[in-house]
Every structure is written in C-alpha cells, then in structure tokens.
Amino acid sequence: MPQLNLSKQSTEWIERAIFVNSEEYERIMVSLSDDKEREQSAELDNLQKWLDELRQELEQRKIIESVLKSRAAIVAYCDAEKRPRGTSGTIPCPICETGTLHFSRAAYNGHIHAKCTTEKCVQWIE
Image (cartoon, rainbow, N blue to C red; front, side, top):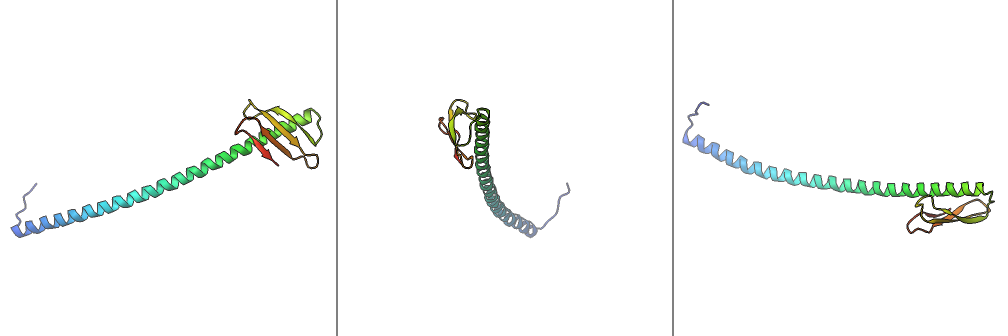
C-alpha cells in the first residue's frame, strides 16, 4: 500500500474527522440499536397477542367440537333407543370417556342441555 505524504495539519484534520465520525457513528449505532430493540419488542408484543388470540380461538373451537360431538352422541342414543323428545338420561361421555354425560332434551324444540360428571369436561345449554 503506498504511503501518503500528508502535512501535519492534514493528518490532524483527518484524525479529528475520524474521531468525530466515530462518536457520531457510535451515537447512530446506539440509536439504531434502541430503535431495533423497540421494534423487536413491539414485534414480540404483537406476536404474543397473536398467540394469545390463537390459543383462545383454538380453545373455543375445542369447546364447540366437544359440544357437537356430545350432542351427536346424545341424538344417536335417543334415536337408537326410540326415545321421544322431552326425555332425559345418561350416556358414557364421548369426550373424556371416563365420565357420565347427563342430558335433557326439550319436548317443544328438541334443544339439549347436558353436563359431564368429569370436572372441566363438556357442558352446555341450548
């Protein structure tokens, strides 16, 4: 690499420019770092909100699927037993498979009210 023959004044000016630019560079980098951290923090917050919403939606879908599966089992049981509307009874719970599903079917409109004996299993009122 060739050597530059610079005057002392030129060398000092370059050193000052490098020093000032280094400080400015550091200030900019810190600022950018803070901005990036804020952006990343905001992105993480948004991701956490999205995950919470997704969890809630999945839980709601699970509940709906449990109700639909249980209701279908009750209707199938009532049809197989030739039970009319306005009946009540119990069947093994198709959700937890350990509890008993107590149900009541309205005579007027066929709506079903049901609850499993297992805690935090399926229950609903139509």
